[in-house]
Image (cartoon, rainbow, N blue to C red; front, side, top):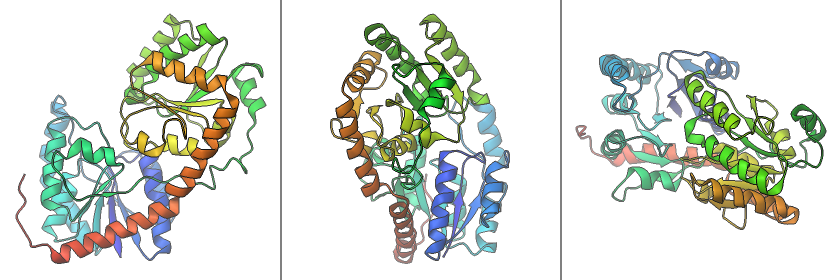
Length: 393
């Protein structure tokens, strides 16, 4: 079987790394992946080709929320040529299943329909605005042979009426993120942060992006510091050029809250397992999510997790069993949960151990690869039973 995985972004990030990890596992099961990516950054293309995967460019342009008039004008102008190129790629590469790894997959959906190729459409966010969410949902119902969700919550967000779907949770590498083998150089991290052994480390991992809710973490930490005492907060993640205004806003907030010696922006790091092992508490303060990889990595590392109850996070971990869950955009609740976690080392260890067990049982790479294989086989079987119909949007 040959699968065309159409990606929305050429840069290396969580979705791209997940797709490459799954592609390696699928290859062992006799399924070969061809990646279709947009023009731009070449980093992911290099990674994929180094792993002997074929990469086809340019990929499809993307629809944007309605206020982005110029971007959507470009999308409209390039739509038909993009569909034609993608249909040609499907035919020339003898693709068996088209798998768009993004919600707004209109070019891929139309190209699959034109070439009568099974379509497994993957919905992976809970932030697509109206009316694009309704457009994507209606087109998926009309054209997709299988609809996959990154979490059950994603289906609740997009589909007002019941629709047949498969939930394909993202994976975590339980061998790479294994506290029994990862060497945590906590002393080196404390030296880097300039704090002593008695100062708790409350860290987070994720690109500096408004959906990650870093401002709510800063406001919560100001409360924690005032009530508990000294604390240090490393923020691990890329400072994206496209989000520079948000990063500047966070720095101004940090100064207003007198947190400049508390909150540290560490940027992108390649030692995330070791950092998670050194954190006393891991925090995910997001305002919207599908099924965040950072939470799965923290679960695998037996971290004490405080997270907001958004998207698929409650599907990943249970409050009181695997971590602490709080409402989003609520600094007081976030601060209280962090304080409770810091106050009980034994409870942190208990919930962290339970979180690792759940990550191994439900979110391993092997299970994710198996779900992808089942998804593709189901899409092919559905196409053989499905009459050819015109697309209605």
